[in-house]
Image (cartoon, rainbow, N blue to C red):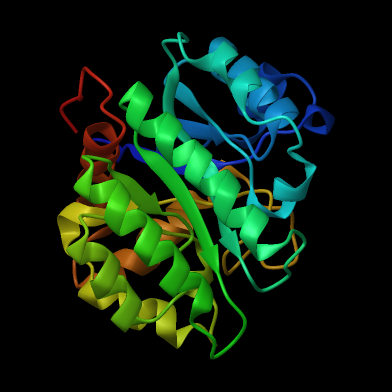
Amino acid sequence: MKEIMKLFDTHFHFYDKNGEPEEYWNEIKIPELEYVLAVGADFEESKVARDFASKIDNSWFAAGVHPHGADEIKDGIACFDEFKNDDKLVAIGEIGLDYFYENSERETQKKIMELFLEQALKLNLPAIVHCRDQNDKDQAYLDAFEMLKDFSKDGGQFELHCFAGTPFWAENFLDLGAYLGVTGIVTFPAAKNIRDSVKVIPLDRLLVETDSPYLAPVPHRGKPNNPGYVIEVAKKVAEVKGITADECAKITTKNAFEFFRIEGLPEC
């Protein structure tokens, strides 16, 4: 009997409206989905992500503030210290820069990102970074690159999650030691830049994710996304890389365990 592949969705968002973690997990889990990382986008969501990870086997969480909410941080990030001793905290994030919507002032986004990068170094945890700019603009990538260059020099490790840039920027961040997370966007017909970027990402720097409940992949466009749909991401990444879906699962799961420094990498 052929062994079922073991996939790791390295980025999804769980909300209170999803119900209880156990009910949600039982509803969306497919046999191929073995591991998940619940990611916080602000303090309250980070607590919800922690709760999910505490109740679901083979799950972990990350705590941070999405750039959309940077303007809401008035008193620093000391409140996030409550997560630092949790065994299931494996990353700081998501954090970063978003100049597409600019829901927060750019300087504030950079300030909050810098505070969390300092925390990642202090706690010896990798950072999950969001970076998005307007079409044909590069300033977010330029600003993030300069900040992450310093972070990398200081020993920091990071992932560009939901990478939506160009091969040029993929290669520049790879030079800093980045891992790159690929979402369901890779299945969108118009997303040639994502598929071209996947081609230049070394296999040992690839991660697959859903970023659910957003960005449902083909053939589930128009539906709320969930971690079970990560299999469609893995299939498309495998197609682009010229490998099998099983190979993609094995490689990206191994990468996730190594990037997030999770002990007990299974034989898969």
